[in-house]
Length: 273
Image (cartoon, rainbow, N blue to C red; front, top):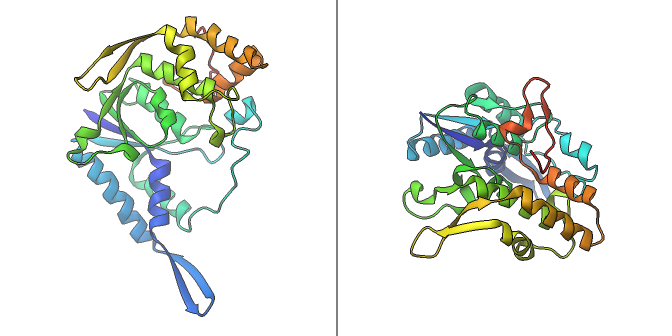
């Protein structure tokens, strides 16, 4: 059994924007319209093609909750820098259609990325083999087989599949903790980008070459040993260990182990977990 775990927020949004049309009724007088049936056909075609091309048996779609406050409870400024633009005209109607016609998952207080993470790493909710279909780089924190839509190559779709090891996933989480993500409203350490972050974490990694082109897969990453180095880098920049931990918690994409299924609450990440 092969299931695609799809970050559906993006696909819904893309389908909606693709069918919006501006009409100029008279000079300088415009209205906008959108065809819901066209949007339905667009997203159905996209999903059906992915399932067929990858030989999957099913697709599980993750959607953000209407209210997703858990990160804001940890960091009030989370995504505060984002300007609230209008949703596409048929957004809510298409979302309802997808919910009624597809296998859709949403959890209280969670963004779609977190729902993807829980589904993808849980052997119980969705048993069997899984491929994660997404675009956001944050989801590189999840171990398994990936299809990142923005990096699809020419030719058969399987040529675009790649595997993220548990070590690589954990490494990416601490990379984002160090470098931050200004688009999401958390800054990490000022002046530390991906190259500096990788240098800080390098002593705790083991890699091996996987192909003739020199591509390598991270096979070992000691999170417990790396964490004091992350804290030291924060303190060197005049920040505190508490700020480092707060950022790590914000940066973390939920895995099944980070979600309390009984209380429906996030278990905040700790370096000893």
